[in-house]
Image: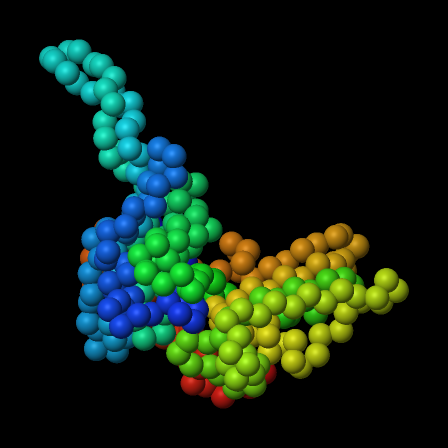
Length: 278
């Protein structure tokens, strides 16, 4: 089974130019070099889907310039040779052009979820001519889970949230906050709240809206405090356990994978259309 993680690719102000769209940025062939290790995006394809719209798929590949490998050089003789371009691991991804939701399958410890997000966005940035750019992948997490856990804490000592304006749309739960960021021409927003020494923080409606915005993939929220059993604890929307995931058979065809991933994509997109009943 393959496990796909879900996130949202946030492309901040200044990234797009007239000459390049997101497909071009992924397909330019730039290689990110880190000593003897390289990262690149390969096999980029544009798939047109009747319901999801344009889907950009491909693979983030981690490979080594030269690696000593055991090879057969003659009958019954094994020798070590320097083999160029040895693939260490690869992550398949499916990116929705319209909403920038992305599903990707980390490759164990070789390409972790954090490593995929970091290197994927770095490659995009290096493929653009403008210097006034930024790009991040924020995870999409189970709705309301972070807030519920935050409320269950005995004492909330510190709360931090970082946000980016939505692209392309928002939802009622955090529309006011999103429009405020847009009206102020904000590309990044960060806030840290620390409690009085004698009391814990109280989460108000405005702070709740910021948490919901982060849960939907437009930022990150972190809480530090004391749990009900007296243990010091830190929770975050970026934690692996919180990220929405989908298991798919490894032998599944691309069409079968898209059909399975669509179930989750639809569930996330429904957040933006349904009435809030919480």
